[in-house]
Length: 489
Image (cartoon, rainbow, N blue to C red; front, side, top):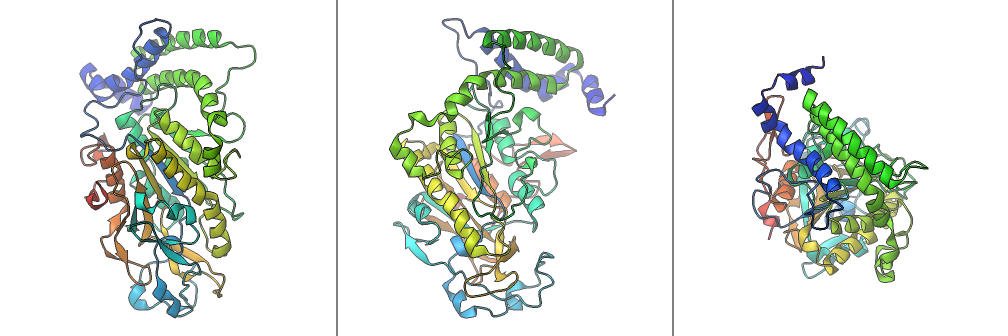
């Protein structure tokens, strides 16, 4: 017998229901009760994704999160961290006093030199706050008065796989729940017809090879699998097999699910496996998504002004623009967390060409998302997050010329930003040295950043824990982390 199942069977009734039965059972019962009462004229809708008892811990400023992840590592000194004095160091060796023996990847460790590559892009100040922004982000620059920019985020990992795992789960070790899974587990969702946590993976235009996306970035880890993010596809049906087969009516599907739910309930009573309850809830959600997903993806109700604001690719399935608009429509419908993962930001070479293409994909839709949320009164209750898994080196990888260079991975400092949902606009937090190589004022670890996200949602990251492998596991790890209160209203 599987040891986990054996352990579940040996639990006392009080232990079992205290640990998982009440929480998971409520989801399955909600699904069955909702379907049974759907035809009753005065039936009270039952919440499909209820929060944990006692959550949120305090009144939240944000009800939902839209997380824009630029997978690969955007170059901070080419986008947000303005370093005009670097021009005088062009093609000079990076001083040892700056590097201080920091480990570097095998992609540049064999280089004879580490020539400094100043950004070739122009910067200007924008907004009432005067934040410096690269010419590559003209649309986002219009929104800086709503943005809290953190220039000193740092992480422990120097390669993509562990760094992506770290930024999304708080650990380099696979198997931990992702940020979205923690949030959906703790807070549930206000939507009864869509999952609490949805993932979008748009296409990219640079043409460069991109790092793989790891499902652990939206996995539920050791939590129940019902908290795993649901990835919507941009080709064919958004969700595989969500539509009924030919010849199967909605009424027949409803009858089948009710019967299957009863069989699964009996299985659960016999074996006590929480994943049985997860299957029950997932079957019910899939049935509801047969009507909610087509309505969600139908943009015919959007005004021409809105579509034009998101840019020319907004009606192209799978584009970043289409994903950004879809994210707004999802949080409007009560989805708790939407994660957009845009690939192609790993510019080891040909950075000027490829970074332009990446920003062309994302800049206008990102700004449109902020403006759209604000115009609809949703920005105050929606936390928008932008960032990658690490930054890029100030020195060039490979050959450096006046108009071309590449950059290697750099975990010591990189830029991320927050907007809406209880965040101060027009804030720039932290400062780096003249080479954008190390924080010199107000460093922010990635777990501090995640603690701040949870705080905006009304969650105390220190007490939001699950016992696993002998530890009180949490998104922000077992070492001390802090909420960056300087960013908050």
